[in-house]
Image (cartoon, rainbow, N blue to C red; front, side, top):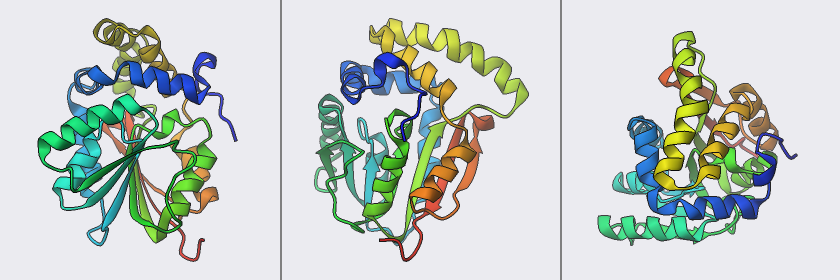
Length: 242
């Protein structure tokens, strides 16, 4: 099922890939600056939820591998997957710098068609990746396919805040200041208008939970972080699913 939350100019996977590739060099800097460094805390919360039994972890839509590097430091074997070659190049540089090149393997591929065997990974994690999928149902179905029975999906994604005071500050920032700062720093106007529009129009957490259940997951546990600015989804693949 295709969702209409992406701007029409960015609905094509190729356009989205090109946009992310164009900002790859400043992607990490912008993430930290525009979130006031809170994104680091969100990622650490996700990493803390990886089950101890997990041996192989898929970093889905890994971008520049911030999440994978954190998980690798907790002695997990990581496969990082992304469709942007330039993002993966940036990630490779960081992995080499951290001395984790024997622990983190990067793959360039479409997240809608994972080049992995059924039931081959113990945990899937992703931070701010599913909002960029053209087909959410297909993406979640692929996640479920490659997970072991009972395997865990850990997802952090933007959502609409629930706290009224945070809303009063967050929406003006999201609509006006974030695109302005993002454009000035990255030089790419479309990228940060795309970010704002996809956050605003992305399905509510309950809807995402329904899509996950349809794809083969048990009922997801939802945790709102920072007043609901982001949501952490924790779900296990249903046992008996093929």
